[in-house]
Length: 120
Image 1 (cartoon, rainbow, N blue to C red):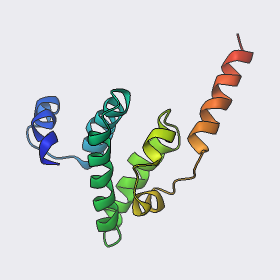
Image 2 (tube, helix red, strand yellow; image 1 turned 120 degrees about the vertical axis):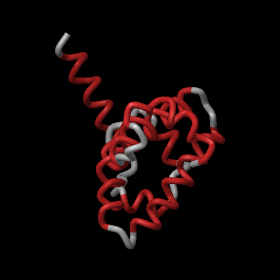
Image 3 (tube, rainbow, N blue to C red; image 1 turned 90 degrees about the horizontal axis):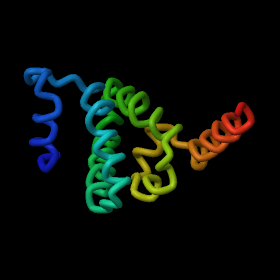
Image 4 (cartoon, helix red, strand yellow; image 1 turned 180 degrees about the vertical axis):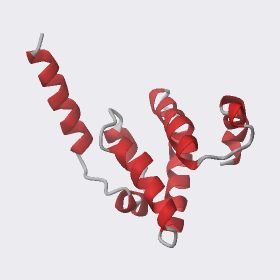
């Protein structure tokens, strides 16, 4: 995603150019996506989700890429507070590759809130 490259270089300069996919997704792309969701930046959300869809299509022929999506994006999807907002922008291949279950994150978050309320 060329528009994010300067921000990426700034935030992950400590890697000295060593591109670590799990770090890029988990420590950069997901936080940027969450910020875009918080800021209601629909264009940025769509852009990131389009990139994830391209990655998911490529992952059909690359087991390592498929695993990266499942671990970083799939696990994030299963617990994010932004599930409702992001799900509408995710492509079908991304959802399939990440084994997305509609409503799972929302349900988990509601249960966690209820558990915390009971333990007060």
